Amino acid sequence: MKRFWKYLTMICTMVLIIQMPVYAASSHVDDQASLFTDQEIQELEAMASQISQDFDTNVFILTDYEPGFSNNYARDVIEEYGTQHYPDGYIGYMINMADRSYWVDAYGDRERSYFNQSKTDSIAESAYDDLADGEFGQSAKTFLKKVDKNFKIKTNAYGPLTKLIVNKAALIIGVGLSVVGALLVAGIMTMSRVGKHRDKKVSVRADAYQDGLNLVARDDRLIRTYQTRVRKPKPSSGHGGGGFSGGGSAGHTGSGGHF
Image 1: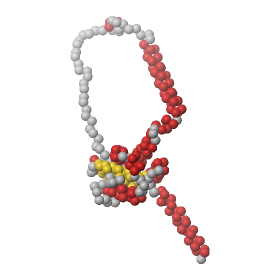
Image 2: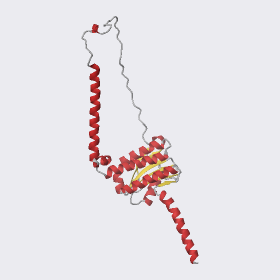
Image 3: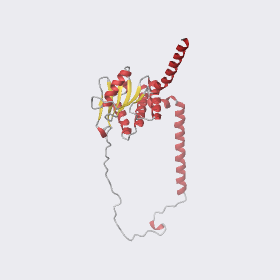
Image 4: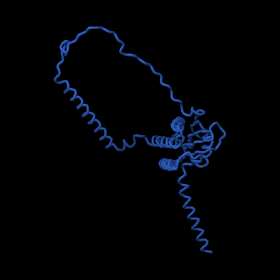
């Protein structure tokens, strides 16, 4: 009997060990619609996990065919999913193939202070550019890159220039080398031009040049024209399939549309 319980314990332990990596590997990416390749899921998981750790928040990506109740199913599903799984706050992205909708959602006081309406609009619009081309994995990567960049800017006084300002010596050396290099190039170009014209003589008489100057005819020609072009505006995000919208339910700040 003791041997039976021993074997049973060993089997249960092995099952848990086998299942744990599978659960951990999908904790930030839930691809129910099978839009991503295995490699893309690994890359997205690594990126989302790193952002979550770096900024003490929850970042996740969902895909599904689940219907909703409003004019944007992705918004309905991600708001319900996010508040149930991450009640303390999150920044998430969903692609819902039921109505070909997408939505970027920020929830929680801290997350919403970093990702206001303008920022979620910008992130959603960037993600849409890849969706329109059918690049679902790239769209999710674009979302994560934008989220990571915004967190870095909002959580550091120097934003993207942090590394340069911290490494002052490297910055000074780099600027110095750039200035010296520019002066050397300018000096070489100046000396080259001076050398080309050093032995040349300039005459004030036209007939002093080879073959002289012989005017035999006069002809007026239009040598310059002007053309005015009007740039065709690029369609705004989400206009290709049902409109673009921003907002969200109470406590949420989000943006998205259809593709």
